[in-house]
Image (cartoon, rainbow, N blue to C red; front, side, top):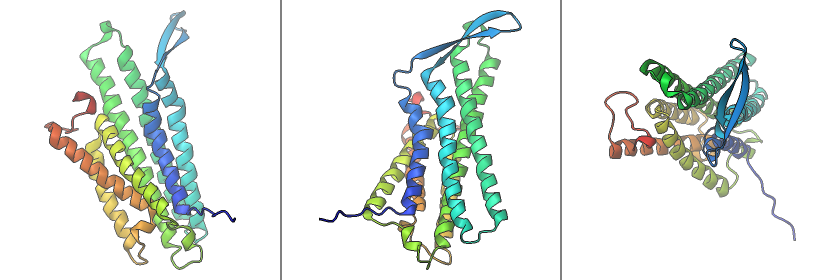
Length: 283
């Protein structure tokens, strides 16, 4: 009896890599909270010629050495994979360099935000009571909650939006080509899985950014980019949205994210100034 061959579309492979990006950026951070033992580091203070102790917990260490680098590697591989495919369709080298430069800037912003958030958050939890002045607290708070979270948000958002754009461009260049059928959805299972992760991603993003106090920024940017990408997908050589799995996931995430944040604001109330929405931990 001949075994049934499972054929996976290139679009689904790319979508799966985005899911891995989400898992690294948001999933690992929560999983590593389990247990979360402290690790004490003994170091030498050269100016005072004494030894001192600094305490990190397991989550901080994993965030620093895993989340940033792993997210960078996965997103780099995905962007490179799509841009190399576009080279086959004579996308100008100058445009490819421009798109890759945008990615590099975004991934630097993401990692800067991630490192700033982790280090300032840890510093805030270790400051001795004698040093807890309002000015010092506000400085740490600004770097952690405003700069750190906002940079993570913008970096991740730009990368995700650019991937959706270049993937759609890759599909549009293939319309009518023999290889086109290898890139669009090959089975209903791919559609079901994409739908599931699109909705789940929207919910996870909503609560992550509500806690990070930057849901309002995403609430403005995400729908605007979703509309632009949807228009680009359907302009000229029209593509059915269901065949553009990454765009479908992006739109589902946008819709779910928007509904979740607005419902959260409706039930919990709003603050009079930015970030407008209450954090999960405040309720």
